Amino acid sequence: MKKIALFIKSMRFHQVVVKNSFIFAPVIFSFHFFQKDYLGNSILAFLLFSLITGCIYIFNDCFDKKKDRLHPKKKKRPIASGKLGIPAAAVAASILTAAVLFFIFKFNRDFFIITIVYITLNILYSSYLKKIVILDVMVIAVGFVFRVKIGGAVTYIVISPWLLIITFLIAIFLGLIKRRQELLKVGSDNDKIKTRIALNQYNLPFLDQLISISTSTTLISYIIYVLNPDIQAKFHTKELYLTVPFVAFGIFRYLYLTYTRDKGESPAEIIFSDIPFTANLILWLIVFLFLIN
Image (cartoon, rainbow, N blue to C red; front, side, top):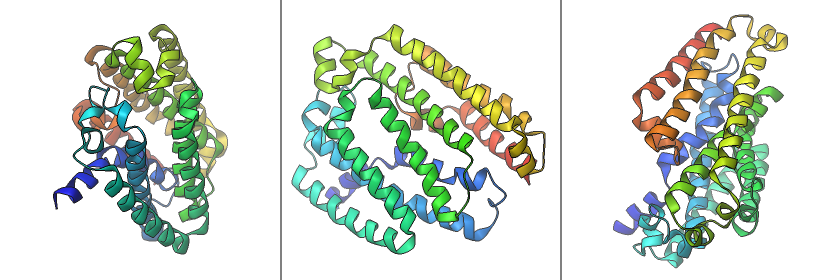
């Protein structure tokens, strides 16, 4: 039972839940959120993909065990600490991945194809792409776009290109902040090289500049989205601009927690621990659904 508990802990569901919530974006940004079939398919896709991403975390931990031991937080993970052996973790994760992929194939073929591409991209990321500065963050951002695409595939909802762009930019924003906080916490240049090679090519002024750009582009993209005549016609309302203050507060609050409270390395930590941020997120969702309902 202890090994099972360690295996589940290694899947890091507290992070998986936050990242895979993007699967619900298509049903939220449509008229189908309150329809059982659409919501039910989204929930099932969320659960299945959460198992896949959880297993990917385990594979990554097996691959990065030596480097994770040098990280102040990652060294405490079950695999990095040696509490969970690599052979047992890898075999269990492989079996679970194969079983979930079979179920996904039976459930929705487009979902299956996206998942296979996502897994392939993660393999490329772990073996090579994560070593390339900027591209390492962009690959992660593409993974969030895949999540939105999954949400559209299982519900057969046509996704607005603007929604995909906003998703990509939000993910870039979060990824850059994560790199910044990692850079602050790792320590020496030697440790940067050993824990994450791409970190050695970043510096704080450069990251701060990129974060500033991504902050602006994310907020502007959302404003363009809610003011888009096609989107307003789709939702039969011109008042979606009322949600802009919530988005602005969420972005600025995240920056505040990053620069003054030394958070931001994990979005899940902020969502589950910062009451103002979480309350704002819930209010945004309520107001958005109210305006389109």
